Length: 354
Image 1: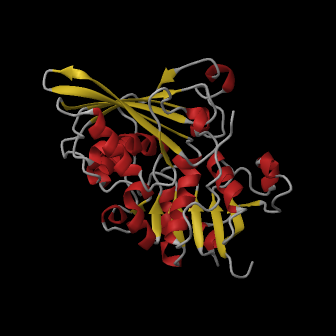
Image 2: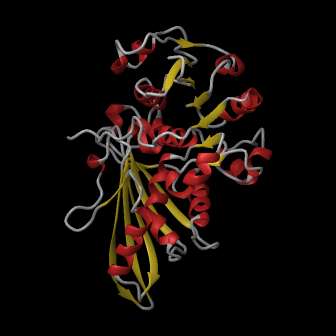
Image 3: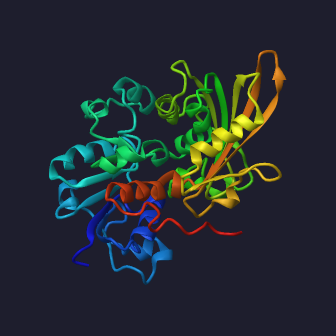
């Protein structure tokens, strides 16, 4: 254990924390030395996350942020938005590396953050000064390798941005883009609420935050950095779906009428040719959640529509596991890159089938 990096998980009692623990406990270069939680403080990790029984002796602790990261090499923050921001400010001076799974340091504009998250950011200078690197490896791999602080992307943002990335890279992404994306119940956390309680969700579909979801500016920021038009806009409808894990996104884009199937195939292939976790599927089988649930993989594909006037429509599909590639898995992938490890460590195994 002496040569392993010491990792702490702040906010480890939720589903994101469970997924971090499930993988980091078997990471060949990491020792998880402590994990914190509020209401679960004092409980054994294995009494909260039953799948970890017999695999760790850790218990959840109630510590100040500075106490929690003392002696650690890296801190993973699996905490709610608006809570994580202040914790980050408390531990920046400690020198510990940070991988933040919240949305508090993803955006570059404090006014946009305040609009979509409903509060004033406590450290707005860190949104603009490059302190945090956006942790989407398919876009920012080389920057992540040099980073010390990672803002890990949101689940919807990852799904939708990766589905549209080839069009952005190819200079073919303009607005408005319309997207409908259905997400599993684990994205709502482990505390039952009226709209997430299983008896009400298991046989139901409902939208929430239509056109106002906080991932909209994150998606636009990401796609513009990838080559999307500056006037790019997104009309996004999130849907609460009756499944525990997974996100499936369908995005509608208008492209020039001269665009061909062969041209788009080449764009998708070029964009993802060297990406270890991206699978391009199409034809008889389009992307689907069952192909990725439980794993860090993403399925992407598209369908090209007929010409209408001077444009034709491309329908882009993407699917991933919201807790893995949309959460803890992507955070670990960025951590691996940041530390110079193989980015596939603890993430290469496929998802569950069925």
